[in-house]
Amino acid sequence: MIRMKKNIQKRKICFPITSRAYYGRVKFLLAELQRAPNIELQVILGGTIPLDKYSQNLHAEIISTGLPIQETLFHSIDGGNHIAMAKTAALIGLEFSNAIHKLNPDIVVVNGDRFEQLPIAMTAVYLNKMIAHIEGGDVTGSIDESIRHAITKLSHAHFVTNEDSRKRVIRMGENPKYVFNVGSLDIETASAVKKKLSADFLKTHGTGDDIDISKQFIIVMYHPVTTQGAGKNWDHVAILADSIHKIGLPTVWFWPNGDAGTGEISEAIRHLRELDKNLMKGVRFVTNLPAEDFIALLKRAACCIGNSSSGIKECSYLGVPVVNMGSRQNNRLRGENVIDVPDENARIIEVAVRKQLAHGPYASSKIYWKPRTAQRIVSVLRTMKLYTQKKFHG
Image (cartoon, rainbow, N blue to C red; front, top):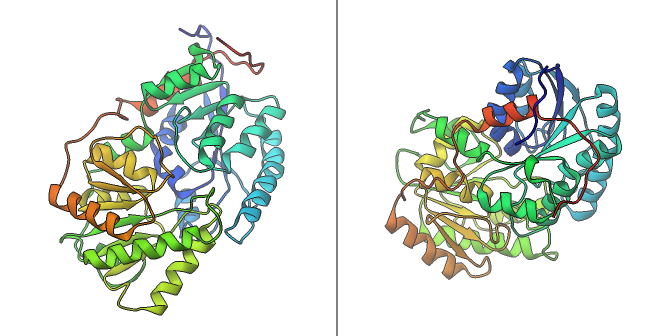
């Protein structure tokens, strides 16, 4: 156990938010931090949050919540390719160094494996700040694997989502006293959503064909695989579109995130949509939804297809059948609701989806769930002994 301070002094917690998915999963935690005694919450918005291209109206939504937003940083280079991602990461380090230096927090909280989070962690280390990392220790595919483990080695406290990840972080030489299995914030959010959506909910969201969500439909979430060569993301979108067309069910297709390759995926979708109107018949494209709406929609889906972590984590708890494509989520802990398929064969994808549709909903899995995840994290952030000099343990 960590020795706690007897006299708890006010502690400044800096919380950078850099993507729509990240914000959706940490809303409960932000609320807990905001009302916790002896904590001064400092929120910095950056990444794709200020950009309507990826996060429609999200910037305004976050401002309206009353969170203590100290800075909004613009540092994203357009292009959606590897050089744009690399240069954006460099600019993030530059911009966040000024913001963190000015705010002078006690702890900087970083999350997961987003490429924006690594330069933030690097900056915090050089500014001699303690770093708390959420969702370390997982194993996946793509560049995310390297980013996540690099952040782990820069961080001082670790909030992991499952026991396998806790053990993995400790094997990486981290102090076991500072590694906490608190469960997943994503699942805490999913478990709390009771919202019901109307049949015509999507009429006010996205573009494309109208979809009645009171009837059977599928969801597609396909993001770039950053370690693939040029053209691969395009090819896989074409294969996925062909599979969806053959299945013939109404489809909600979420726009890709801002990783390298997003330009290629976006261009492929637009090209295929214009080339063959019939190919995308029955498909509605959505850029962004508030977290509660997204979970409520996910609950009603007959099947989720693609390579998003939502298919692995949230869908495991919700019991939604999933067809996981390709390598992006390789080796991530998953429930029985997931069928893994290669992303290079339309027929295999189609067969897997039809199998999941025939199966229907799965029992809820608790592999990522623990009670009071946000409260557990806040309790540790409030009371743990601060330090900045790391040592290799083991």
